[in-house]
Amino acid sequence: MSLLSISSFPRFLAFSSGRRRESTSTTCLVPPLRWNRCLGLPQAGRVGFLGSATEPAVVRFIPRGLGAVAEDLLHDAGATVAVLVGGYALVFAFNDLTRREVLQQNLSRKLVHMLSGLLFVASWPIFSNSIGARYFAAFVPLVNCFRLVVNGLSLTSDEGLIKSVTREGQPRELLRGPLYYVLMLMLCSLIFWRNSPVGVVSLAMMCGGDGIADIIGRRFGSVKIPYNKNKSLAGSISMLAFGSFISIGMLYYYSVLGYMQLDWGRTVQNVALVSLVATVVESLPISEVIDDNISVPIATMAVASFTFYA
Image (cartoon, rainbow, N blue to C red; front, side):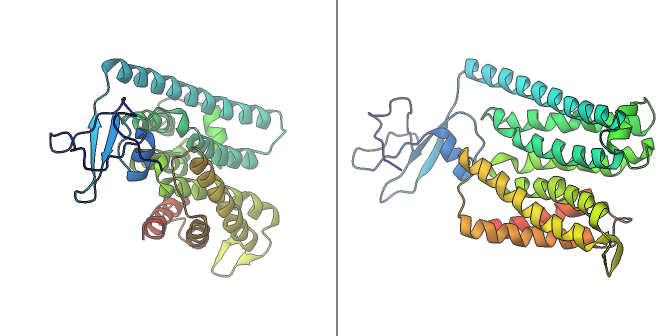
């Protein structure tokens, strides 16, 4: 990274302890987005980075104007509407394919399970770099959470929703797996967001890995796992393979956009370990006690937090 003096980069003002840095020190100023991502700081305002051979570096925020804040709010509101509309369009399309018997109900449900979550994660970059962007993104699963609750309690009835996300077509099912699913989407948005590999990998395994395991397991799952007759060897192998592939693909996507800087040799090893743990957890005979949409992402978050930040 090149060093830029204050005079050559006039958009930034740098201060340390209320004083301008003396001319004998080395001053480094960088674009705010890159330093926010690298340091895990809230992405709002402009950032000046100061450092010298004798004094520690200090990161200072320079507040943005009200016009810029209003612009970010409008930007994020528009992004939220766009993601919501896209989500509804996705569900409507698969409902229509199911109604016309192009897809079987179970396959349609699992494809919605996979694509809705993965596309939601892939949509995060369209939000702004403001502090509140993640809250706007989390509003999308919050809306879906509300829909699931009111339909699950039979306060209203949306037959399309019930058919698209439940196994047996019972409204009460909405209050279990589907509800846990959207809660995990919301949790990862708020806690990890787009500059952390933990949230991205966790959702990739929950949406992509677990989803493909069910699809492959139903078609080629004649050989069952010895300790769980409800799970197949083919399903677990596909979850391990496709979950790893999808996770690496999502991490590459975010690294290309500049949100993450990854050591790919170590990253591939970390993803393989995380995927293995998630696959083992998914295969355990505990689904009657704890839903896969809770056990898989929680286990993934725990292992990924350790491996990526160890």
